Length: 417
Image (cartoon, rainbow, N blue to C red; front, side):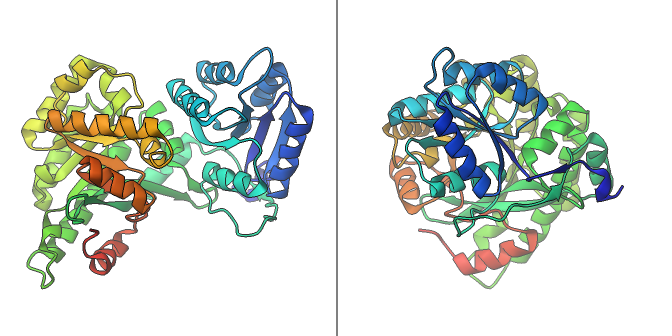
């Protein structure tokens, strides 16, 4: 199929702005368009919902304070109607209210990519749009407008990608807060479509879950990761440097809630570990907090079997779901991962600091390893080390690395004390 058969759009991304002040909305619209983003602005909720249905924006900019229906009610509506654009919140309210709105968005299943406290600058808008689109913000104020022919990724695309092994992995290091040693890596799936370009994991994982492909995707990702780990281990075993500890590094793999009941899938993972000489104790299976709690009985049975096999189990994104402490104690987790939303705001939010301290203490009291993700600067690392967090990962440590870049990175870094 040629590019000519795809419906052209003015920009790669569509931004819909809801603000009850027409001048504010139009100003933001013009700023976004100068940055190369196709944008529309509306003032009424009815028009807003119509534009979502017909225009299908992938980014929404939402004012919290509006007459008739405030931004929190709009977030609830988005969640109830299963709209999944990325959301930017704008408002002149105090930071604690903005933080509460962020938590409200998470509770409704809405993906919030940033907040813009009023007044904001073009630079601030550019940065938050870059996060929403997964791009690096340009250095200039004026980004070129891109003419691109695009379409939505389909289940046929994903089936073909799995058949042709198009999904590749990147590995993000995890280090010990105590001594800076690299203790493991999280395997992150990446998909670059030959026509559509980079496809977000949020998109293709959801597509796989909806269409019965998640187990095939998980098995393919797992096989790649275990094969890589076996080669990585062989390199460091008896290596002449002082970094022999890397021969025991662990690998973290994400597991969908829909896969927890598939015994054959996990049997195949166990078999592959034996074939490659990878001890199950070096494999951490990560499940999200909300996923693990959807069916407590099934989760208990299957997760316990995995622990008996020697695998470690991590409760991912802890603090963003709806689980009770009883369920956390009941299930056989060995690691608690602190969600990056708390870590990334720890420098400015006393609430986030308090939550992190609570989670670290909770993990310690339950005998769990605590790992914080989203560490983007030294101050966050220092705070986590100070409160007793065991392990960290994030851009300050390293961005996810291509398979052949991991060993050079380890040789260059040494220990991150």
